[in-house]
Image 1 (cartoon, rainbow, N blue to C red):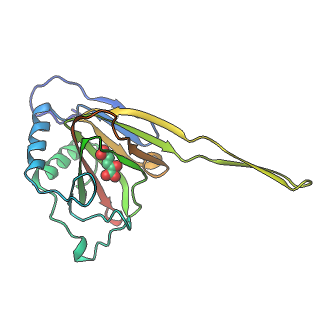
Image 2 (cartoon, protein in one colour; image 1 turned 90 degrees about the horizontal axis):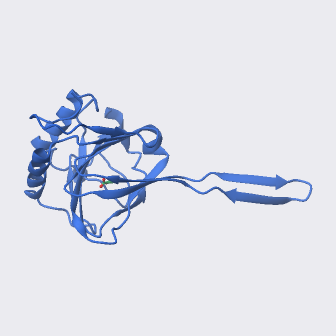
Image 3 (cartoon, protein in one colour; image 1 turned 60 degrees about the vertical axis):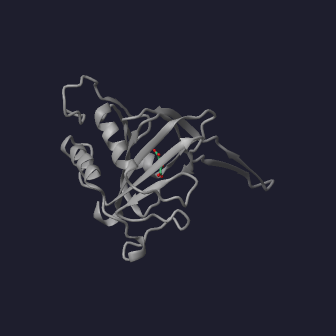
Length: 214
Ligand SMILES: O=C(O)CCC(=O)C(=O)O
């Protein structure tokens, strides 16, 4: 069994790996469980410091400094809720991850909200995973371009050519588990472009490990 369905629903997990180290598993949970998770998320208060609302558990991530001082009480948030631990435990049981993570951020994307291109901070460990809920989004991964330099020593002319970035774009459906490791986590940026049309509200639960504890 490699999905978390607790009943006899028949939807099969659909797995893809579009970039080295990126695992995409659709239908990881049932629609019923998805509904329960959204209900749990909506019981909790939101942090409104960004344009999209967030909830931070375990540790509060500072988007400006891109840092996390685990020793500072200021960065401590309430522990991961039981529903999140139980989701992670199921993912451990079916072999997608090895440990319960120390941090979770929930993002809410309403209307035309997205997230700009970034590589997750190196304060976090090698494995980053998320579960998407309630609405789809487009996600774009880009690998930084490589610069090719050519120089002619006799004439002292140097030309440098910027190769275009590699781009991989795909739809993330609700109830999808996305795991980033290796190249996809370290060498590619990921982003969610703002939608041109308003769709349903999307929630993502992104789980991270603290570097030394993974
Ligand atoms: O919403 C998502 O799926 C992506 C979230 C993300 O990239 C982040 O929180 O850094």
